[in-house]
Length: 313
Image 1 (cartoon, rainbow, N blue to C red):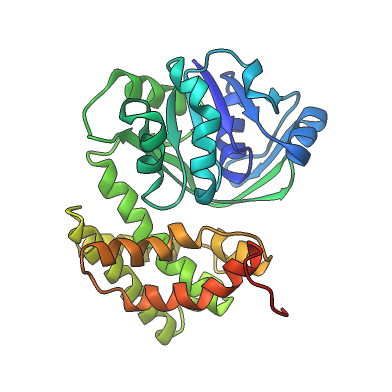
Image 2: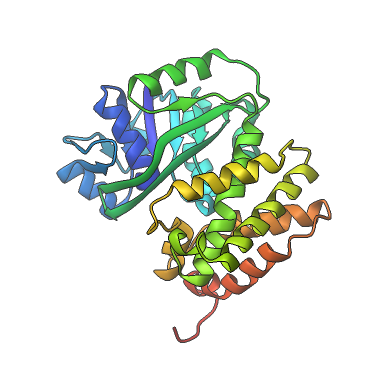
């Protein structure tokens, strides 16, 4: 099985590195500084599961040189998915399957619009990792696992085969009974944490301890559960309880990627997190006042990062 990792940041770098270290045929598709760093120095991964350096690592900045690929792990940011879909189209036309690992619930539909339903799986990663610098990834929390499956939840040989490859590489992985439920459960977790953490500039240790911010976390989670239900996804309040349990398990200094990007003045996944909750809620006439507050307050900084607004920091 030949893997291509499109997006060699924290997520793509970690999981691609694990697969390659286990002997799988993995090529990273990267650009600019990341391409040069991996080509010249390999890929360095520091992890609570064990550090390793992949040297040499197969990397290219020209996907056309790769030839047929079996599986593409899509590790780009959520807002980069439509552009990535066009870049990976030749692989899909040659039979590759795409496994998106973006935060949020909209990436599979965006990919299907460009690539067709049969080539796209649903997937998510449970990991807190970030890029120290190009070619250097640090995994600090979370199981480092992948949950994935066919979008209509049917049992398939390709998913069973891929599951075996992940497990052999030491990557905890599962095929859930309902991938849509799994995707929405992660949105319950990340969107409330991400919005509140980004707005308050506070780590999870503070947010889950102060009664006022803990109540906001729970309220935000309840909103996402209601939106999911409005879209006929059978979430219950148990999803909120599991999300709070996950937040309790994180190290107190943990922050979400949304906060880190916004603080650094980079484009973020705001539209795919809080923006999606508001947008998808509006489609089904489900009120999401807290997520609307998060989104509206963070939007000026997002637009500034994208060069659409200009104001002093």
